[in-house]
Length: 159
Image (cartoon, rainbow, N blue to C red; front, side, top):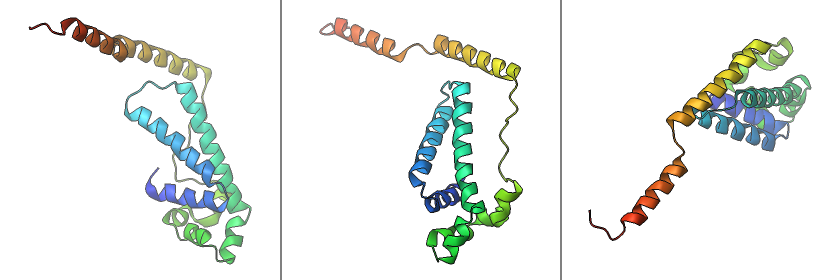
């Protein structure tokens, strides 16, 4: 997500009174993204489940704001958050409030067609990567303990 999209959904959640939920969503997404950037092995099933649930919750709340009439009501009441939403470039690019009614999206659709074989392959790949990482990257704490042990044995000895 880019800054305009984050700002847009932040305003939508604020208007719906769900700021804390959105902050939690962003925090969870940030954690997942940082794990991916650090090349950590992430359980694919947990990732897919978390991502699917988070995205669905945010979209449902946003749909309620647009379809339920909250945005229009608040805009008529001169609510600044509603004005910010309606003046957002994301709102304009979506085509306005009809976005959720039409079901059109600028975002890449989530791959919801998971068949059992794809899920098995994904799980097997996860297990293989986890094993390889374990073999290639020895436990850091074991290495630290070994270094400390060598330091203790070498104290006071001139090399």
